[in-house]
Image 1 (tube, rainbow, N blue to C red):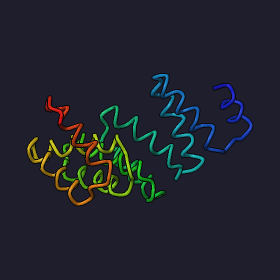
Image 2: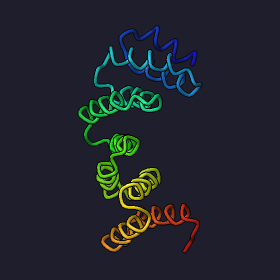
Image 3: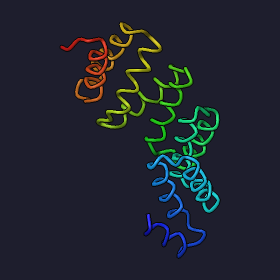
Amino acid sequence: AAAFETARLALPGHPEPLFRLGTLAGLRGERERAETLYRAALTCDPAHVTALAGLAALAEAAGRYEEAAALIARARQADPEELELDVAAGRLALRRGDAATAIALLGAVLEQRDIHPAAASLLTEALVAGHGLAGAEAELANRSAVDPLAANWPFATATLLRGRGRTR
């Protein structure tokens, strides 16, 4: 933390030390300080994707879903290729009760990334929320049939089956 504080003082107007200090504050549970530092980083660079994502995570954790969605949208606009933002948007959609959007976003991530356990687990949760247990299992079987070599579908299916108390 001392090195980032030194960097912040040596590089006024640069967002990265502020972002790093905000991340450390967040890890220590200092949410207000983390939010202040992320906002300061965004003052320096309004399109700082990781500061936007960090601030969105804090907003989501505090139950401020609309604010989190707006921040994720800004981050996705600044870096539309970053799949982690799609995972964050999918997780947020699921938390907001929008299983269909979560399924679309997380499914797209899993089609683009060879393996992404967090997205696979969230997709499983979204499929259960949107289609029930039997529907989720059927959907994962269909996705596995279309792309049998992808590691995500078996991982998601195993997650589903563990949740049901079964293994294959």
